[in-house]
Length: 300
Image 1: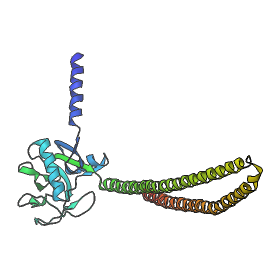
Image 2: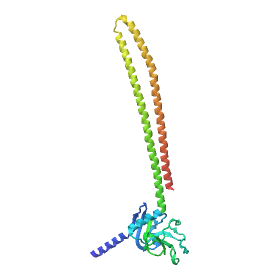
Image 3: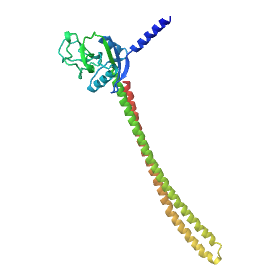
Image 4: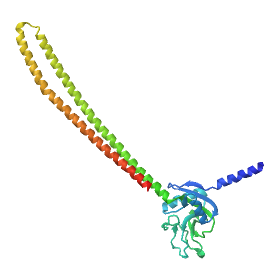
């Protein structure tokens, strides 16, 4: 019984190891790679499809070099792995016959063929794989019934959708940052107006206090004059009347100016506040439109 359990354990471990593994290339792409040579091209395509993936498509030199570098790090030497291209089973044996990527239907514009390939030998070679007996995983056309490993990648539609989401996210973040920066700038401007207003009002208060102190001093002098002898009363009374007259003149000159200044400062503060809120509302509307546009496109 113990031997049977050990046998089952080894089977389980073997099945776990045999599962295709995910790998990341230096250009940021993700590949599911199966190295075991037991799949024809059609089954390899199915293995990718059932995982909601596709056989790999390679469109640029940069993309190819990143993948070759990854494969070299995994296998050490060149290995036969199915790619996602075929020639639509063309009877043409010309090495320049067109090939297509099966998942997207796009014509192959970049290629990495072995010298003399693709030759469609005996009119039986219609699918593309990396060649095991030449360095650097060069491409070769071969019979689609041969058995190799395979390379899967995320579907182009998924990649494009994620890229679109990233662009929309970046647009929203940019709008939000612009909104935050504008909010900070306008807040600083508003604080400057408030501090300026406070400073001027404080100065005016000091002027008012000085005026009241002067007025109080004059009144004290006027009160003291009433304790003098009768002969000086008329003279002091006349002097007090003159002082009160002067004080009233100073008061009448000062109060309108102070009120006018405070009124102007209040008007300036109201205008500044109104401008701040207008700008903030405008920025907020831009952010809201960006978010709504992103959600609208996602729903489509």
